[in-house]
Length: 132
Length: 132
DNA sequence: TTTGTAGTTTATAATGGTTCTAAATAACTG
DNA sequence: CAGTTATTTAGAACCATTATAAACTACAAA
Ligand SMILES: [Mn+2]
Ligand SMILES: [Mn+2]
Ligand SMILES: [Zn+2]
Ligand SMILES: [Zn+2]
Image 1 (cartoon, rainbow over the protein chains, first blue to last red):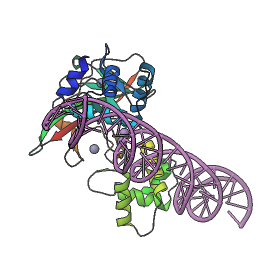
Image 2 (cartoon, rainbow over the protein chains, first blue to last red):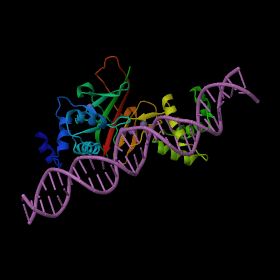
Image 3 (cartoon, each protein chain N blue to C red):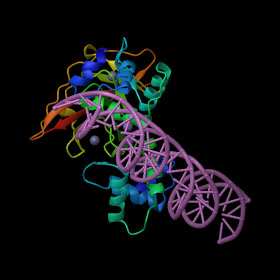
């Protein structure tokens, strides 16, 4: 399996559950956005055994810590995650609550002119809200 | 009171509680960011009577709907609101969880080149995460 | 292998921010 | 004032997330 080494290299034991979640998250053509509930459903659809909800939470948080997932800053009743961990921005469709990636070529350079003493910029994220 | 008319003009009855919350939120030199819990504390500090938590939630949501408050898209266990309802962006200090306004002059123009069919841009918000 | 240990999974309970409920109260209108 | 509608309120309910603690598993040392 290609994920066993990735997990071991990250200091995460390659358990059956983690490998299966890797396959749901990363063995895809395109990156995608998801909530924990949506991921749980995807897992149910793809695998036969059951993975407990606690493990799904644990794994998502572990992967986020390792930089394999990103949280998307958005106000919703559920937390959104992104398998696209490159720097990029989002459309957020207020009507249906869906997120759409903006490619870097879709957004001109963001110029932050102000500096905060002793702080470094870690990320710059643009959220473009859409309505009808 | 200056808030009575503002409330009536918005179709909101100028109740004692709403006027008092207006004073906490809007009778200030500078705009500020807050969570419901922080607002509750501010209210306790400023007024003698008690305002129930349900009323604080109701009022904040009513004010948001009328455009007197904005929600700030950020991932936290509590929702952040902003008394600055102009279009502006934020620094978010990951260390202490504090938000800082970026003035419009602090950020160059944001150029969104992609369009989504049948959708209009409602807002463009930049979140700049800071670390040490 | 065997065995010890730390890491992981799991069912379930607890937490806590937010929303709901329904009864009491207050604001408005005629 | 009387009738109506809006608002407030305490408390319950909701529900995403986190904590708990016991069973299980990966791993490495013996
Ligand atoms: Mn959230
Ligand atoms: Mn939030
Ligand atoms: Zn994305
Ligand atoms: Zn602000």
